Image (tube, rainbow, N blue to C red; front, top):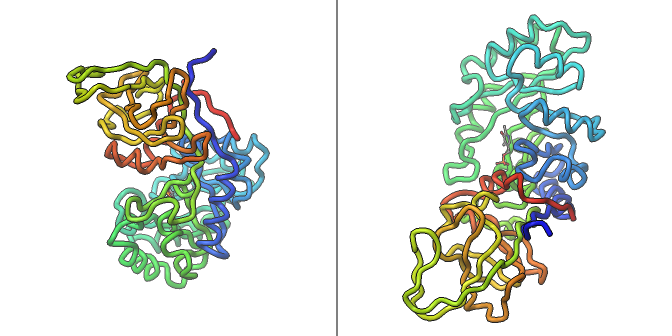
Length: 364
Ligand SMILES: *Cc1c(COP(=O)(O)O)cnc(C)c1O
């Protein structure tokens, strides 16, 4: 028997979340963002649940090849564009659309030999200060691209730094609309947070929205709003089993460093999941977990292959009992990945994408 740990990708939940996002941004076309191997779900595993999208957005050219191998003939967008000139050959061959965020990428296009002109997404830096042309240089970059025979369509794109936060998108949206005023081309500005919060605004949602995290059932603005508030369902469950049940006397400790001390006699379960499976090592005592679908807490330090849980709320639990680290238990109870992430001082994005290769994954 393989080690009793497994991740499940819920295809129905992926479909549901995409439908939810379409409602949130009605009329916009929708990229399913599948970078980071579909946020840790696996592109091949998530594909069926995501095929109602209008296109796939990702970073890696190899990921783009995989999407084409799955038979997808629709749009694919490289969100960071190409990384070196010869990547453009693959764009031509696979008909990939690509972001253009810097002068070098325009230089490469200008010398690229192609029979089929490219569609590019010209990226503006609207305050994130990662990638993109500054607003004052944007129109010059647009003019350069428009003059190239290698380019047949230019779309306009920016990425909000604070769509999930209190500052919101007002300043970035203002600079984007002012700078792009009168320029021809489709617009794409909304990530998950912007699509859910502002997608009812026809101008702001633009022609294409680019939700990633919400597609995968995690709330982009947790804890202000949870996934249920946004009508999103979990798309990944991480579950394991109890390998052992121990009884601790008052005063006994558990795990490396003895970080947790039993105050009273208690039953403790040892779970076949550790940080080498992608469970965060920094998750402290008290991080929520389900045993037999009953909510309880972790105890002490997470080790590489195991962690400990408090069985006092689950007296019937025994070796082999189901443990749900996040997602949905067999009895239908669910534990939000956002809540686990928050306890560990991080976000659902990081937990999903950190799911380790050694964990077997099934699609349901
Ligand atoms: C990752 C990414 C997205 C999706 O962001 P979420 O917060 O996961 O919705 C959208 N656009 C770009 C450019 C990205 O890199």
